[in-house]
Amino acid sequence: MQNYFELFSLTPNFNIDLKTLESTYQQQISEFHPDKFATHSDKEKSLALQNTSLINTAYDTLKSPLLRATYLLELDGIQAFDEKDTQMDMAFLLSQIELREALELIESRQDELELDEFIEQVSSKITLNIAQITQAFSESDTTQIIKNLVRELKFYEQLNLQAKQLMDEWI
Image (cartoon, rainbow, N blue to C red; front, top):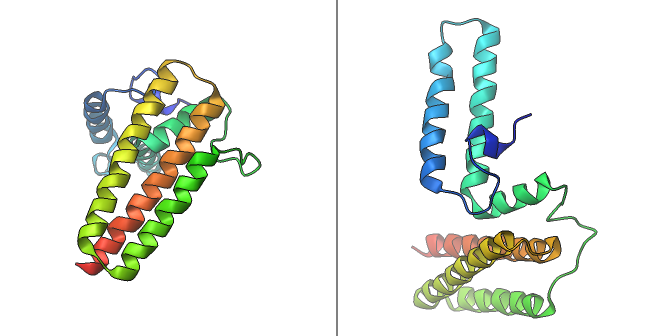
């Protein structure tokens, strides 16, 4: 099976050109769109649907820094979220607790301004984390360092989503 990078003629790398990904995606999706196969055989329709599904999954994976980093690790046979591997940086774990407690406090106060500042703070952490992942992949750091950064990114993205959902509830 073709890997997701090959599907879009990209070099397997964390730092990819998102514009190239987008344009190649548009070309691929238009070529295999099921509507183009409406008058074809059931087998060809099914194949077009499978191709479209694969293209969409590959695009979503490569477009997301978290999913792209996870996928790159998987290509190397490494599971970023292996339940048996719980090794994490203690400072990050403490910061995780502090951030969750801060969000709970903001929620109890129902302070929109404080929540907005919290979302900005977490968004900054996401941006910094993505830069660290980019650097780690480009410098071929150990997989444990990259795994930890990917896990941290997942935490920040989930926390950011949780905070944004809370903001949506209040608006």
